[in-house]
Image (cartoon, rainbow over all chains, first blue to last red; front, side):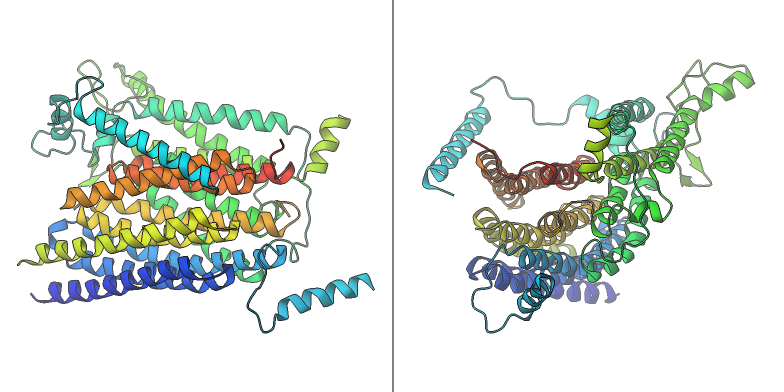
Length: 129
Length: 268
Length: 94
Length: 85
């Protein structure tokens, strides 16, 4: 009989972690200086702030008997959404960062070394020579 | 964003809020009543009510229950609008052929994006099919599922390149064929009752799926205790096919390079 | 306190925190000096909203609302891909 | 309590959509305008969600966030990015 409550409590802990990650990511998104630094905050926001709470919501839905039969639909769809997010979100930010660097839209400002830029310059030099 | 922009936005928001406040106070005419009206109560009672099997529509969703008997007409008009748009784009691009290129390794975006897209090529159509086949139980239906499935088409055109779909066997003409199959399915579903009625020698309505007083035939709503939803299942399935392949045609044509189109349209 | 009331109370406590973080994301999305900033902010915002919509469907006690979350997560990824393809390639079909 | 939260959610989405629509009209850079209009329509979709119309949301998000930006970006790539005077 206690299995429902245990599942719901685990789910609530996961949602609470998600909310914390979400707040941290949004503050970082606002305060960080440029695009490449903001990518870190976006990672926290998508994986910690969307994937983890969706798993938690699936657990809460499994334990929530007052929602009726359709709670299994809710749990399954949450897990599918979580899988979609963990597959697609990193690729989205990767593609965006690659395009930004290639089109030179944002300057890589606080940098020690930028191997990608050196490679591109070397390639262009080879082509010109 | 400049300071004048901020000022204009703030004044627009204040205007909208004050308009909303005046409307809520009843300054622009009488307010509609808050409690549920009688026709809404009727719809809610007759949506899925097992105790009155002669009046209920056996649909769990109230939007479906409202368009229950007219879902065929709903589908017809949706497809008609879309049909005109697709025919226009095909006519605009007449004479332009998508060329065939085998070597597409170096085109498109990075290898990471390509690998992940190969996974989602299976994942996304599954989600779309579940939305289409559950259209009579949960929110969703043919148009929604078709537009979800279009994600795959657009992503594969943009991430791999415009040659990816023709290489894997989905050329423009084949998409047109599948779309025609979808349209044919919608047509057959809408006149199926009439055909059966002609054979049996009774009256029937086209585009409708409930038995009337003078027309005894209807699509089955329950099969072996599973809610089937009459003709809704068939309409959703065929419209899913029609919409998905219609969008495929549009995006395949849009992705052709501009020089090629100019050559055909200007030189004739 | 029953399990139902306790879950509802928990969601009520979480709700304003979500609203606060949405506001911050939206400020970045509107302000964002370059286009990638805006798109990145919309990206993170929409994935978080997808999680929040699932939570709302528990709060409103209507589980069938969940299918919107899947659609939102899928299409925002597509928006990323369009914008980056626009900047990276010479032609959208290449 | 639930009503207050729901109303504040609606207010946030509605005000954001007004701001995004204004910026999409004013913007000279058409790619940026497309992104702003995507924000505006996503906010409208969420308003529909809160008002319990999931069918509309399922149509509105694909068409306004997915298909219209795709078509517009295809077309902008074939013409010009900046709006003339």
